[in-house]
Amino acid sequence: MRKFWTGVFQNRKRKVLEQKLLAQVDRTKLPRHLAIIMDGNGRWAQKRGLPRTAGHRYGVEALRKVIEASVELGIPVLTVYAFSTENWKRPKEEVSVLMDLIVEYLQKELDELHQQNIKIRTIGSIKELPFNAREELAKAEKTTAQNSGLKLNVALNYGGRMEILEAARTVARQVETGVLQSSEITEELFSSYLFTAGQPDPDLLIRPSGEYRISNFLLWQLAYAELYFTDIYWPDFSKEEFYRAILDFQGRNRRYGGV
Ligand code: IPE
Ligand code: IPE
Ligand code: MG
Image (cartoon, rainbow, N blue to C red; front, side, top):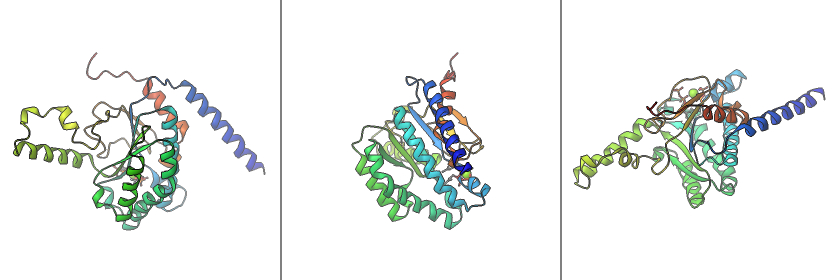
């Protein structure tokens, strides 16, 4: 009983703190595009004596909170790194659980995401994913195609180098066939061949789990992003953490090479 009331009290305290942080957020200075590397699921689980895959399940809960907070604040674009081109190196069972989780997540959440007016897009080489995952993703994109709210990019089998190479190949082909002159290749043009075509570059990148690297995520697009690192593992990432990151971002002085 005592434990129950302690839990209630802590929850209440957390809510109050969350509201306090939210009240400090300047809604006129939000990132136009927020990118997140959802990392630390495995270590979160191992710390609790659970299999790594349990961490991935709890990671989905954190994603739900962050999507909700992004919608509430009115952030225009959110890109989440869910599976990299390097993650195939993991044990088969883990990869398979991750793929199943995508299917499960979409089957369970698509209606809710649609109701929130979210527009879903996958970025990465989708054709290598299992058939049922591709099917659910295609359905999610189609269902939400006309939505005008948060643009949610889910990076799956995504690699920044692969994305740049693919774009370079396409541009090269166009030059070869005479559609394009090499002198016409500008940053704007090149960007339009990336998965994020038409979207602003990320203003803020969040990486939890105490790792200080980009791990092949949005290499081109992150050129001038503000980077935010926290030691918290992704499954523990909460709205409170989310607001902390936004507030930190709002305190930054962005110079873009100027003075
Ligand atoms: C991120 O968590 C999820 C994916 C990469 C799919 P990890 O599984 O990388 O967790 P850690 O980094 O091993 O703790
Ligand atoms: C990056 O995390 C990829 C995702 C979160 C999907 P990793 O755990 O794969 O990256 P490294 O191995 O720490 O660089
Ligand atoms: Mg990791």
